[in-house]
Length: 215
Image (cartoon, rainbow, N blue to C red):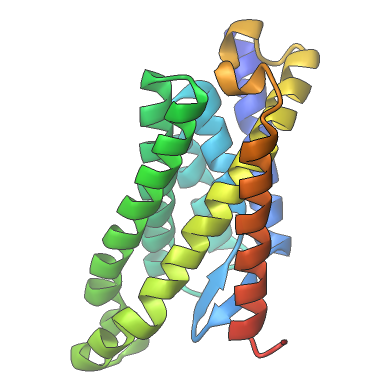
């Protein structure tokens, strides 16, 4: 792949990440919102590696801070930490083992790390951001922040598994990435993985609706 094609693809993925963040933010519980930008960033990491995932995350979070976010620099820092914990971890593991097993292992590892890291950083940052006593934030960690990040991880994992093959196939047909970029899991359809991913996705969506009081 030449440098121009890579930069074009990274720019396109960054733009898509921003768009899905701007139009797809869903309130879940308290001040916590879900948006699917991590999915696109993770796919970028799967294609080009964890450093590219970090660069996209930094760029999208910065533009988000300047445009639609009302959380300022604190929101920017939390966005980058959360996204990189998930996307960069998943991309790093997948780059070392470009198979279906590597993809699933990377996504699960990213989910676990993101959940743990965000518990720590919410404990540190949220009292500053909201002006809550730290003791009040501690009381929110298990009933609110932990389930939110588990839900976010589940959505990210399921949507990434469902979209990775179609996106890579489209980019390859557009000559934006080479044939060698694709991993083993893009070469053949795996109905079992797609079914499980779809079940996880639907279950997470239903949980969001329940937490929002919609159903």
